[in-house]
Image (cartoon, rainbow, N blue to C red):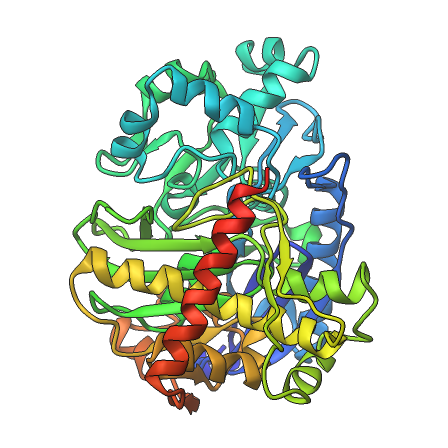
Length: 496
């Protein structure tokens, strides 16, 4: 079959939905489907997902996307996987069934364990080996919690009867039967040495986690096995895998050191390519693996905001002040400013550069004249403020200014937010022609392995600019707004 008649299927398993997208060789979407799934909140600050629902929705949209593209499964040259990171799953090695709900990256239940490890003096060593801060965000302490709190799990793990994986591993297992992950996802567990490229035996001892439960770690562009014939009617090679934020960096063709992207999704994530250098952050950012094409690691600096688009979901679903997310832009533009209101959406603590798991959300500056439009505008502004904090820390760590930001994610469709981001960071914000950059990155990783794309130059030619937002805010106004934001953050962190 000629090359032009073949396509790449990307599975994009996110925090609130499962998507599947079929791309052609120009990186253009020819078929796509998406399904939401349930969010489970057993206690305040706890978040879980049903692993079977993750698989069921992801498989269903994969079939539907192929149908939407009006192609046959035999025309899929390869499958690439990208996923919500750090979310922790355990399943039975014999039955393949999950033994507990997935503990989601947002979940803060292991905050006490993190404090205990800090008290034992492990924080600096963990950071040196993994590039990560000691925070409930990551998988290692979530595993510790499961083994400490769920009867019988530790004994099963020590017998080798359990498999641990992040969401990518779960999907790879259900597709191919193989227990594997890639280097980007492994680098987010608190258990992987990003300098040596292996599971760290000292960290496993420190956290009392049996090595037998861990998946094999492969490059991001590699042979993960074949999706079973009974799933799609054809055996399809699975050849690409990366955590969602690293996949987005790759999908933006940020191949040169210093290139930077910001993804505006449920959370907000800024990454900067630092090349072959694992830059140690002095500003509470993460050092992480950006990708592995089988020729050594490319590293990145990363800053993570836990609540970004999720603050708009909160306004819509809990406070009922929005009929839908798209209404937020109209309301924000209906007022000249936030009326002095500042919203700090620390619903599950604060990520970089603060790393304060105990901080909680705050709405400040409310007066009798405050309207829902002011509140909505303040929520959108908070997303930009948090991202600006990350990007400034990134510039300081890397020692050079970010010339512009490549942006993607669902909330990047909000023109008010993108303009305000350019204003408060004082840098242009550039949107790509395709909004599906994360899935595209996974597709590129898969297609590079099979020769569907010939190399990075081939991929880079596909990147196309859609729109650019230039800073328009006066310096004095910007400074005043940032000072007010800093005061609000201080108040939110004080109220515990």
